[in-house]
Structure formats: C-alpha cells, structure tokens
Length: 88
Image 1 (spheres, rainbow, N blue to C red):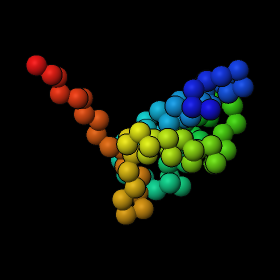
Image 2: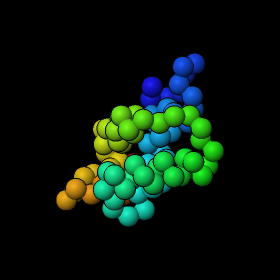
Image 3: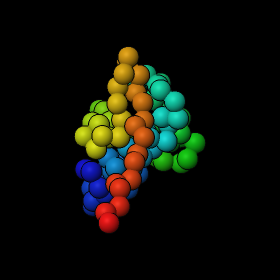
C-alpha cells in the first residue's frame, strides 16, 4: 500500500498520493479544499486510477506520521523540511 506493488499502481501508492497532496499544499487548506485540488490535479495530469476519499485520508495519515503535514485551526499545512546537520 505504501509503495507500488503488483496490486497497487504507482499513482495509487500512498507515497505517491502523499507527494501529490504535498504539491497541493502551497498554502494552508482545509481537508475539503485539499481533496478537491488533488482530484483536479489528478484529472489534469492523466491519473486514471480511482482514488477514494478513504485512500486520500490514509495518505494524509502517512504524511502526518512522517511529520510532513500539520493541522492547525482546521487547516492542513505543509511542514518545512530541514536537512539534518552534518556531523564533523
């Protein structure tokens, strides 16, 4: 589910859907706004595989577990990614 398998197409794998969600979060959005933008984006980029709202929520859960998104005041926000400091 997280990565593509024989039964999960690459554009439906949770990591891929999560990346697509992250691309939509250029500003804080409600869950409904993020869902609508993702569906529009997938239609515009020829991703024919069906994507249910439940699968979208699973991808959001994965992003939250990876500490990449946050929910504040009912808005989804993308967290800033910081590289680990180099060790000397």
